[in-house]
Image (cartoon, rainbow, N blue to C red; front, side):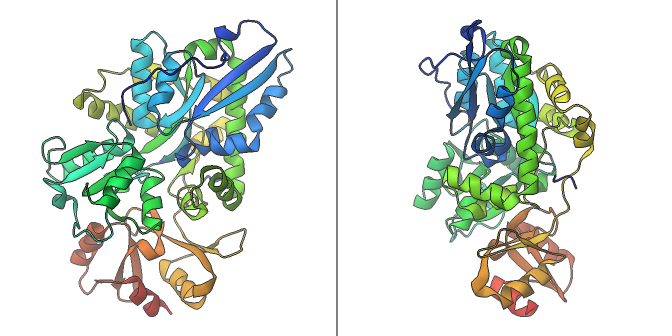
Length: 445
């Protein structure tokens, strides 16, 4: 185990197959409907990876309660339609990011279909799951430069929350200081490529994907906020009460999928890549052994504390009113599902940051103590590298080595996700200077 972080109009879709709720009655066949986001790879242990492994179906078959269970996996691009379907009684269990989870709580209460946060999928304690990027040829080099510019994001998402907070810290009014474009991630990515927006603030895996493709470069690392961000699992209250054994089976399966990801990070990345069409190198950036995201189903107090702080951002945007986070969180099912092991998971901390190389044809990555050691290896094996990753020198956020901003400080070679943090380091350390990736490789060789 790795023990060492859009809101659009809610559309009520057409009725689906009977869920594992009252709709299924006492018939011998029960369909459990799970809403997930295949390309939001911070949720794979409750979605894409879990589905491919078949662990949930296995746990359901082990119930031996006289019922025949079927799982209806429904894939969505964002959390908003999952919430719409949950409040319509059409989805039993869903996974989404922290800001959408709060909207899920608010809508559930408002519509008389209460939901509860029952477990966590992936998290980053500093906020590194969200990144603001610009076009590769953009002259923007700091958040201050966004004043008066067009910025695409998905209003009500965790990425929007990062944008709002980052702008506030930069002294820019997040509502009046920029022209905010409320767009789906894919639309925003296209807008950035077309030059119709100056920057894009989005959640995993869009920033890493665009950087990997050479279609964007990082402007702001969300980890600079030093505020946890996470994705989690929410369940309808009526479903949880009627079929607690089914929910516990899901949570057991989620824990098993988490263990698989931690024990086989490369194989897991390849599996998710195959299911989503995302490059495995991008999946690994987030979900790898030292990736940006740490996976653990335990409902950690620091994550709930951060969730409470998120409420004010949604209220300011007039997306919700007050939300009773404590009543929304219900960890009784995951505690029962994981038993004595829950305490250990609750106390677990993210793996220490490390530099990693994924050699071509390899089923495992190689770790290095320092970025300079990684660069030396890359320099000597230029044609044998599938991907190379380095942690930001200040935030620890993993990034592609060839996309990082490099600083030479004497014999040290230090990587940064964003140019502003690199310049801040240079300013504070006499003699340090920003160098190109090629220059960093040459110095390390």
